Image 1 (cartoon, rainbow, N blue to C red):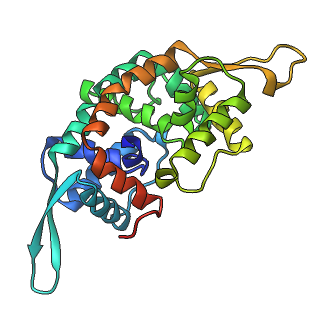
Image 2 (cartoon, rainbow, N blue to C red; image 1 turned 180 degrees about the horizontal axis):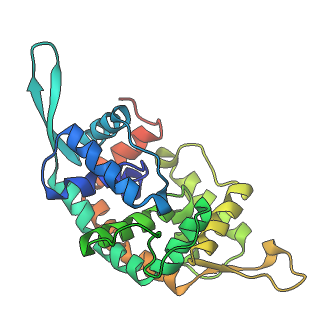
Length: 266
């Protein structure tokens, strides 16, 4: 459920930008777009616009990740500095092990993300040619961002969790994931994992080195079992603190997820 909070691509950059302390909307916008430019090789160069940022900030405030001091003016109520709540800081802290996992698998992870974007070759240090070296702190949070780019796949985490039980045929993975969805309609809504989306998800997880699926010559792909790689098992282990964070905020997260799925009003 905690990963649902990070499905918006701008939520994580907002949290990282606020690590240094409260910022106004204009300061946040500048800082996030600077970070986007530094990491364009992995996440694209799409700029964040003020309207989208404000919508993200309001949503994060509702979710209990941010606080904002309202400032009264002559005509309207404006927004003062934004800052992280204790829950927002705890969420970021819970991802330190994810950063360590990303550092250990940086080359394959970065190569897969760049290939998906059709990016050219890079210099020896893994950064695009011409981009200044990052500070250790920037490298740390860049690593978490790379991992989240994989986990942001709608079905990626569910597939990884199912394969954590052992090698399975793709059709068995889809059946198990959909059975879990059916048991939790109050959270999942009506959408299920289709065969087409399953294969797309598997291919992306294979590209990034989290899953193995190797049919023998002449064997149908659907009859060959897939399994987690050591990197896949390590990523799930790195996410355990995030799971503990979610358990500590379960009641509030249940409301947020149901609302996002259109299962609650407001």
